[in-house]
Image (cartoon, rainbow, N blue to C red):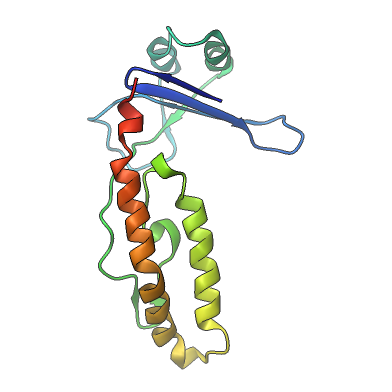
Length: 159
């Protein structure tokens, strides 16, 4: 379920097969907040006040939250390199994406499949070359998705 409002929105969905756990994310503008952490405590009162005019169901969920965590949505440019010798980056480590295309996890899974194929049958001393092949096969696509998600940031401020 999504609730949209001027410059803020809420997304929620069930995350377990029994439907007992709810993933709930509330996005509000906070341009000066740039802490790179997933565990920074937020102010639940401030969050509730930010969504006071939202749908009653959204407010019920917010009212049931004893505490909240907050993290900044930070933009990153595509990296010039993903590998060096026998070290390679995959997923968010090499192409972190804003959530506005919902492609971060999918791109990471694609990375894993392509990397596995590039490594198949290779000897340890050939890994560097395999990593280069992996990077050449993935970089253009993930860079397009990464930049496309950035262009979709209007979703954060749409009302």
